[in-house]
Image (tube, rainbow, N blue to C red; front, side):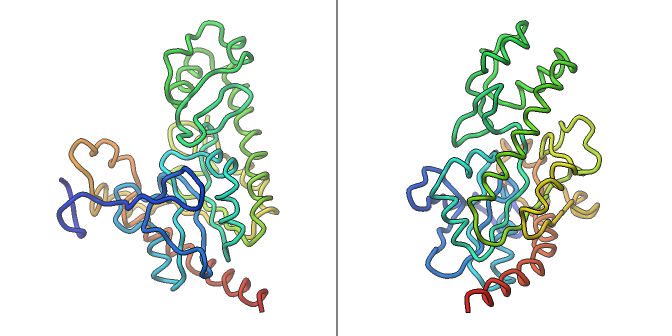
Length: 281
């Protein structure tokens, strides 16, 4: 076991559910009766291999329960298709939504697992017609599928990428429309939204600055956090994982990056929570 700061032993994520949702989230389970801040997101929000992910750090900073609804490898599908989760978001003082990759959601070209959004289920007839030279039975994961399609034909793949980008914006607008309170869109990752090339290689896949700006009028604030050089230099320092998990851990953001995310979000959330409190009185 590799460890630092948190001591020996495996990291216990205390998995829990909220309401009738079938999705397992990181615990401990928080009360939804008190005022709270909700965090929707993927692996980074969940805090894989990190003892204190940024929602936990913010709870300490703000003195308000922070409900971590991060889900490993999640796409928008997890949240947009679950009325129980959007209800939790609507009941929060503020909801923080991490910008998630566009490939992990069902679209005109293929469908994904409703809870494990990184899992490819089946192609549509349209995708099969565009890529007649591909055996789709070979693929279980979206990234593997899309990487292969791009290799087979970058020109034909452009149509798929554009569909994913368009569907992502539409799905985000749908999700934001169901969360009636204040919302913060969070970009948290090593990718630069202004320099995406083909949008693959670093999460969130396919998301561009233009797509973020299309949502600006539909969220209260936008916060961008890209880990500093110092955070990246730390590698897996302070993370908790077994040797078998090392390859996965080396691709994740570490504790320093989470500290930077919490530092960037804290003043924004303080302001919005204060505004929400004033609106309630």
